[in-house]
Length: 340
Ligand code: ASP
Image (cartoon, protein in one colour):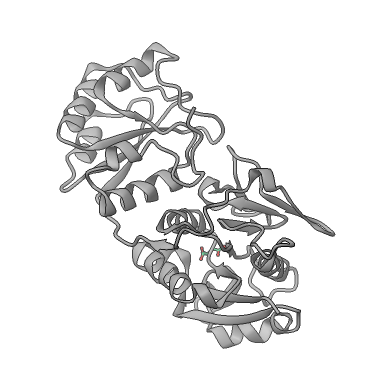
């Protein structure tokens, strides 16, 4: 019988309505289990390891990422796959982080959650969780995991985690992977798309990376942005990396003050990466004259990466390999970016 470890961090899927405030709060793991007898009724052996207390994903950050990754690492030999229950709000950040932390992963780590709590009649919790477990346990004829990646399963699609963004606070289809197709689709059958799946060398040992340097920022440009705002971000104490969210194909206002601020920051050793504000498509510096100053200032191209993947990758590279961070940040480490 296949074995899956279910790591529960919390999120809406585990929540109940608080009688006093009427707000949703995470319940305890026993309450959650009582709503999910199906977990233990199928042909897959499921064990549960839960955060205590369960938390909303707005409270999840590098410490929790370390906790989740450590649980996978410590129990890696004992299970065929892992499912992580997580709130949807920051799921793309956590799942992206895990994809960089778990080098040479050869077993599935599937994140999922739900838009409605498990106890609500119309909840999407059961379908999401039961299918995620099936995907985590799925193997080919030779006994190898079909999707040995960190992924997000939601509604009826399986995505590479570090390509995802939460796109909808209302619809059951909460996530999208704008620049990379889904790895599998679930209907009556689960259809896997092996040519899109990433396989690491099965003989290479799983290596865990846990050092994050959180001295990073996201600077979103907008028409009318003031020098003082840019200056404040680029001079924030300890700042080492900046995700610069630009217009269209990676464009920015051509003001000289902006060029000078960016150039001076790069000269101070700050890594600045150009990420388009568009969900779909790629940064193409040099296509328009208004991106030439960014190139001249030493801003790097983020190509088609998501902000979630870029930010977590930046934190981990600055924490683990600060000397190589500048070179590695633009390279494809685990399928997160299309570099031509
Ligand atoms: N606020 C919740 C969370 O991210 C939302 C959800 O799970 O969908 O934990």
